[in-house]
Length: 77
Image (tube, rainbow, N blue to C red; front, side, top):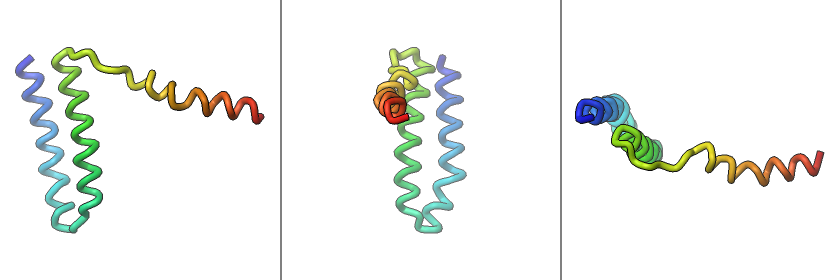
């Protein structure tokens, strides 16, 4: 398990080393903020999977969002 956490960490550090310096150099502050936000979400979820945490199912969450929209579209059509 320690190896899996280490490899996951190494992957995220690698992505940050590749992407972040370019964003700072180009002064892309908003893009950097969004990148950090999504990277944090991805890190939490991937570490949760590696460490066998009980995590919410993302498909179920999307179902809650899109089911009312789907029903509304069916009624309109």
